[in-house]
Structures are given as C-alpha cells and as structure tokens.
Length: 148
Image (cartoon, rainbow, N blue to C red):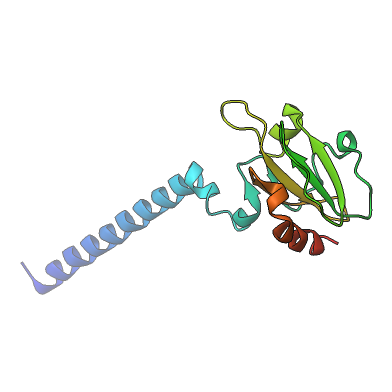
C-alpha cells in the first residue's frame, strides 16, 4: 500500500469520525432542547414557579381579590390564620381556586397557608408557603417596601 493510499484512508476515516461526532452532538442537543429538562434551564427560570405563572405577570384573579391599584397588597391564603400587621393592603382568602392560581394549594387539596406580594402596578412579585405569616411581619415588610 502506498503512502498516498494510506493518507487517503486516514483522511476518509477522519472525515467519517467528524461526521459521526457532529451527528451525535446534533441529536443530543435536539433531544435536550425538546426534553422537560430544558425548561429547568430557562433563562428566566428564577422567576418561574411550578409552570403556573411568572413572578412578573399580572396578579392572578385580581378582580376577585378587589385589589387597590397603586398600592402593594399582601394576599394571605389560608383556611385559619391571623393576618400580619403590615403597612399595606391585606387580603385574606381561603378560596381553593385562588390558592391554586397562586401555587398555594397543596397536593392533598389543602389551602396554604401562605401569602403572595402584589406590587403597586398589580404584578405578582413573591409567593411562599408560610404557616405563621403573622410572626414574620419584618420579612414581609421588606418585601412590601420593595413592591411600592
């Protein structure tokens, strides 16, 4: 076998290897982009909550909560709890539909307990389960101050 034949065989093997690597990479990237795992790496994932809403969208069911535009609102979602004493509009509800829309309905159908912070523009900015929201007025005040 001549030196040219050997070089041609090595060259064709090299091209074939590169093609296989590129196809494998393309298939892997395609599979990743179409998989549920890709949604976990969404650039705004930090704002996403359980695929229900984003924390910069209008507050769900604002009309049912009778929100006062221009003021931040604390929405307390629970069946039996005490409202925190904060310098903001406070709405209390035990409505399962509202709890569901705010991601505060448990897997077993229990409402909260938790709360959500709506900013003065009417956008949802924060929500969390909290069994003792009335004991956490300082933390809630910081959230509300940033929602003005």
